[in-house]
Amino acid sequence: MDPSELQEMFDKVELDIEDRNTETSGNKWSPSSWRSKKVTQDVIYDDKEELDKVLAKLRHLPPMTSPREIKNLREQLADVALGKSFLLQGGDCAELFDYCSKVPIENKIKIILQMSLILTWGARIPVVRIARMAGQYAKPRSKPTEIIDGKEVLSFRGDNVNGFDPSERKPDPQRLLGAYFHSAASMNYVRTILHSDFAVLHDPTAWDLQHFRNSHTREEYQSIANRLSDALNYMKVVGADASQISNIDFFTSHEGLILPYEEALTRELPDPDTQELKWYNTSTHFIWIGDRTRQIDGAHVEYFSGIENPIGIKCGPSMEPEELGRLLDIVNPNKEIGKVTLITRYGCNLVDKYLPGHIKAVKESGHVVVWACDPMHGNTEQSSSGVKTRNFRSIVEEISRSFRIHQEYGRTLNGVHLEMTGDSVTECVGGFMELEHHHLPQNYQTSCDPRLNYEQSLDVALLIAKYHERKRRGSIGLM
Image 1 (cartoon, rainbow, N blue to C red):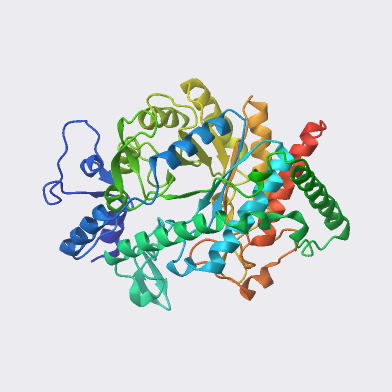
Image 2: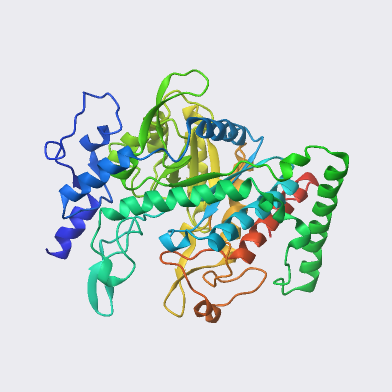
């Protein structure tokens, strides 16, 4: 097939309804009504019969999340939208099945717990924790093919589509089952450790701040850790909500890219309070639409418009303000507070240009959303060594400018959305450990986009905490 033909197929695939045996009734929503729409970023499988067998198996498997958990998150995100809580969402760019293991899971949970504790101390409000994990196995790509060692091969689309090795790039339906079982195993272990003593491991006395090259900065943040430790010890002594230190809510999320998979795990279940039957995506708690798949008349928006889960929408420079208002009306017609999280991703040089228009559009629409800053995707650059990287200063600058712009327009930045890991990888430059471009090859592990490492993630949380502390004192600024 000619590459131009493959590109056209990749960008815009109109599914044949008759061949897929899809039943739709007018404009009535169902988990399969997306099949009557145009699909972007679709996966083309050679063996349709094998795909149907896999999807039938997925429909038979038990849910991974419950309506009660999903409703709990919706209620917490309503508080986030009203400025009563702060959202921390983070994890791998693209999970690998190999990450479904004890140490990677524990490292990821540990850094999210530590960051949330720091943010709670700085903002003086609860933090809602959502991990990009237990399902983040698919990635959209700008091109259907890439050149490796002089040979054109299909792009790596994530472990639930094909393999990272160039010899394993053919889409395999069995990988969808692999995604289910690895997600279920990850969730099971997360629930296990959070009901053990693991959650108390975010004790500030255990933090290693030796990566701070500047001794004055290290001492400054050590004082924050000491104050946090004193506060926690005081809580334990007086018995004030001491159980909250170890008993926490923790939610999972992923991009809802592969719609056949999401459809198979969408179940009609009773609302935990009213017993009314509603449609829940039981593959995760929170699911988002990517910047490449948010077409108003597209399949992804159709699917997302009918599920009870709280949803996210990536919002970048290509999003027209008028389009944003229409999109919110489609996916949240009842204007439920916190149902939608807008995950803004502009780049530090474009946030001033586009964010104000989007804030105005949402205000005029009457929707109350969660505003979360994704400072990662708009700040990707090419390293001198030839690999993708991100500059820590650019990441922090976009967060800082987003805080300022929201305040100028009478709104609040409600959270951050980060691609990060609990491991000490070398994928982004900068941070208080002063990673430089020549350090990247030392431990460059990502299969897709560069992530903040453990130390850099801690740095971001500390800077945001100090921002809130200075704000209370009347002095604003992240850096």
